[in-house]
Image (cartoon, rainbow, N blue to C red; front, side, top):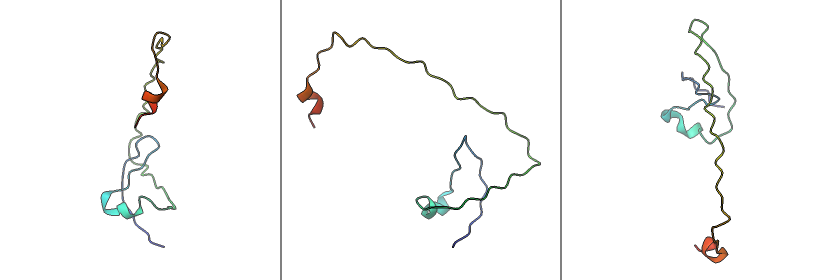
Length: 70
């Protein structure tokens, strides 16, 4: 088992692995997280919501062969 240590900032629910450890990016990992209590707590950013887009397609003519053409 290899052990590495690095510091990074979490972005939402993601933790980026530094490029020098990219060999570990596609492996099963056991992760331990330590938080420095002396740092200030960042404000929680809420995700921006996008409203649904409605398009009236009744006047469109669809051709299955054109849609499946490669």
